[in-house]
Length: 207
Image 1 (cartoon, rainbow, N blue to C red):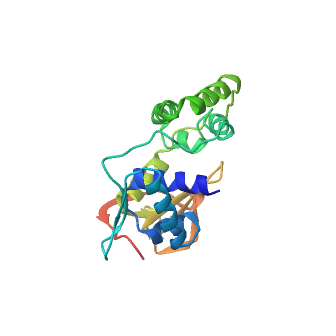
Image 2: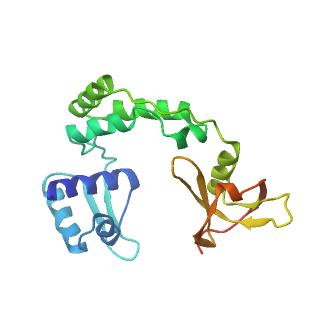
């Protein structure tokens, strides 16, 4: 358990930069003092961990240190190969097939030799297919509006248009559901979207 936690700390610091002990503890579901003990152990093992004190302090990796370790067991690498055997319908609807194939190849190549071989062996022996899903321009438009925090009008040509601050899309394998940042507990099913009008106006982050 501790070895897995140490590796996750290393990868978080490598990929996200400086983090506080509290942030690491919240993500790894342990106490901040446990993180500090782990950092001491990593320093003793020769890893270039730097601890900054004060209000702007935190923990980070020094000397541009990077590791190729991913923390994947052989079983986990094989499971990822099965999961990535075919793009999900959501990827297809969003028109991201080319990006999916490129990312899948990059992921496999980034694995350490043993994990990569397990991943490639499983990928060569398992074939998965799903029914083709047409690219949905409305879903793509909403995904871009969420990314850019653009205000959207649903049912734009109806007598009862709905102004929305789009924050999240959910896909159940058949239909999409949109969630408004101002009312995150109230789903807006795809059948209720109607015509869309994507405004150039944006909405702020947060509630």
